[in-house]
Length: 292
Ligand SMILES: Nc1ncnc2c1ncn2[C@@H]1O[C@H](COP(=O)(O)OP(=O)(O)OP(=O)(O)O)[C@@H](O)[C@H]1O
Ligand SMILES: [Mg+2]
Image (cartoon, rainbow, N blue to C red; front, side, top):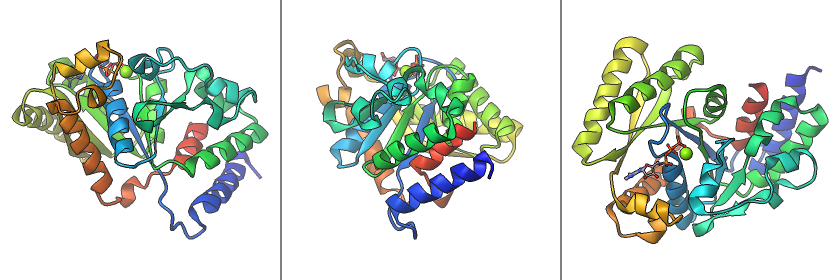
């Protein structure tokens, strides 16, 4: 039996064990937040959205896939003692390295450990998958915060997630970088569907104009892609103020305009009908990571 067959068997077994062999349970949704350009608000979007979803009763796991900078920890003023590397060394269980953030969502500090996944032996993969399987049982949504730029690491995580959220702001450089990211994912990796979230717009009109510009150029040069407008997060001075305080704006200023938008976005994501094209599953995410 080759490696792919063995992995397939493990996946089927773990999947059946947790969601029922008839797949009646709801598998966790896995969404990657990416942008091409750095500094457009990915980490703030992931963490504030995670908080908002958790407050609405969802069990949320944030994967900090910014391997070098550990953005999520810094933003929240947390210093995790252990990360995925310790799990892969067999020193810790996966559940022991999770950090609980304000609002009750969980953070999986990945550090450089994530790059070791591809190198694991079958036995180690089996152990890791059983750990993930146990975790998957207690998660509704996994949000992945990717790093800045369009490098292999960013592509790796974005491809493995079922829902790809591209964040851009009204700055022209953000538009060109988001376009470059979409171009790489669609032309080299055959991704056809993207969800577009505009950040730091002053009005919805401005956000829609940015979205329109992106769709125009994508339609013209990339052919038939599906770019869905997920919404916009307004520019709000309360957000940088909360960053400086190492707090989440949704917690520090829940009545601000920007917080209202995060709550609204969380509601939207919870209420939308499951889309078969976006059938997220946490174990398929890890399986894809192994394959990549
Ligand atoms: N909606 C907003 N309103 C006002 N300021 C914002 C908004 N979103 C982001 N910012 C500002 O942009 C900064 C960068 O945000 P963030 O760290 O979330 O970006 P990022 O995309 O994760 O960056 P990197 O690519 O470096 O990881 C924030 O610290 C904040 O000052
Ligand atoms: Mg970041």
